[in-house]
Length: 103
Figure: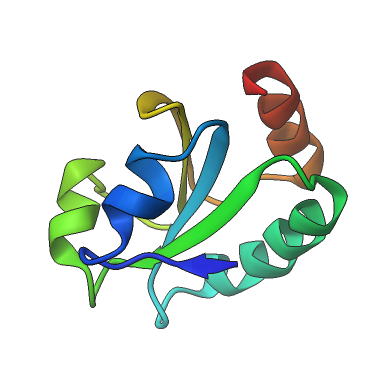
């Protein structure tokens, strides 16, 4: 999973042609730790989708772009267009459905 910073966000997300699934998380967040392995599983299932993560405590500027109020939040961006957010712990099947919808 690609770790996003303000230095690589433009290249990794804004200039990426395709769907990017972005995990916005914090190390202290229990539900974030529960969601992380699910996103890793999905990453192995979708070779044509880019999976990334943003630590909101380390990258406040990036989390502000998505107007993050709570974590975990999963953002869906395709061809530099914001599509949707999934806020809170989300089951794998729901995330999978969202990925299929936005691919």
